[in-house]
Image 1 (tube, rainbow, N blue to C red):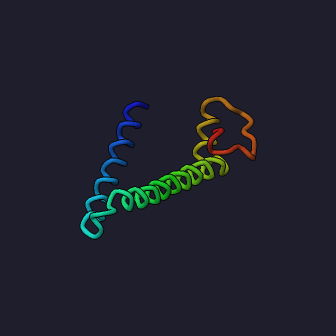
Image 2 (image 1 turned 45 degrees about the horizontal axis):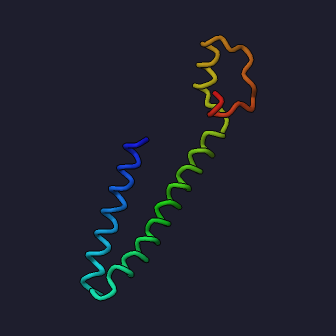
Image 3 (image 1 turned 135 degrees about the vertical axis):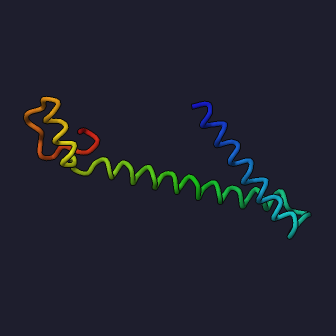
Length: 90
């Protein structure tokens, strides 16, 4: 968990530095303010992408269990596998 946080901080710092470098060339007097505004938008986009990815994964796991999952359950001794069993439950 701590490592993931450090990686996230490193990513955000690199993004901010890249934005600041690019903005400094075009608008050096307001570079920090402009870079911060752009960074806020980029961070929102990253969070949105992550939320969509997580939502897609959750939706995928709610689909019906696959044939292979059902077969594995039978091998493990489960005799009655419900028809509406999800991939997550299997």
